[in-house]
Image (tube, rainbow, N blue to C red; front, side):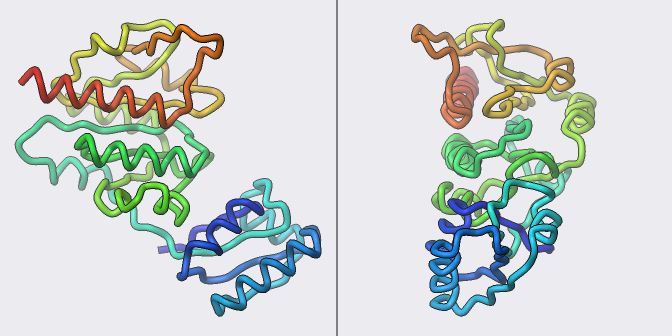
Amino acid sequence: MADEIIYGVHASLEVLENNQTINKVYLSASLAKNRAQQIRQMADKLKVVVQDVDSKRLDELTDHGNHQGIAVSIAAYEYVPVDDILTKINGHDPFLVILDEIEDPHNLGSILRTADAAGVDGIIIPKRRAVQLTQIVAKVSTGAIEHVPVARVTNINNTIDELKQRGFWIFGTDMQGQDYTQWDARGSIAIVIGNEGRGISAQTKKKVDQMLTIPMAGHVQSLNASVAAALLIYQAFNSRRLKK
C-alpha cells in the first residue's frame, strides 16, 4: 500500500502527537522557524526522518493542497472493494453509507464510529477531493476504523449506478425532501452524505432515488456533516430494527 500524506500545520501536529508509525516528515522553508524547530524536536523524539524540501515538492506530495510548509507520510490503511463488502453480508439487507467528498478527517472518523454502532455494512468514499483513511481519522473513530470496511472508488456516480443494478435504493439529503423521521429504510439501501460546505454534488443528486430532510427550527439551517450522518444512520437503524 502507498503511504498516506497528511499536510498542514494542525493536522501534522496531531499526527506527531498521537502516532508512532510515521514514515517521514517533509518541511519547506515557508514554515515559520519556531514551528519548524518544534516539528524537528517532536520528530527527533519519535526517531522519524525529517527531509527538507522546496515548496514545489510539497505541492506535488499534497496534490497542491494548502500544506503550509509541512507534510507527513504515514502508512496507509487498507481499503476493500465494494464487491467484497457486499459478499460478506449475511442474513440481512445491505446498508451502506456513501460520502460525497467529505474533507474533514474528524467528520469521517465520527461517521465511522456511528456506522459501527449502527451496524452499517460499509462506507464508500471517492479517491480524490476527499479525506482518506488516516491516523487522525483512526483516532476520532476510537477503533471503529478496524471494524467498518471502507471502499475507495474512482467515481461515486458510477458506483451508485452499479448499486442500483444490484437492487439498491439510494437516498440523499436536501432542504426539500421527505422528513427523515418518516423514512422506511428497509431493503438494500445506501445513504449519501454530502460535502461539509457544498452538500451533495449536482450530478450525484440526479442519481438519488429519494431526498430526505432534517427539519430545523433555528437560524442556521445546516448541521455538521457527521451530526447529520448520525441522525440519518440511526433513523435507518431504528427503521430496519423495529419494522422487521
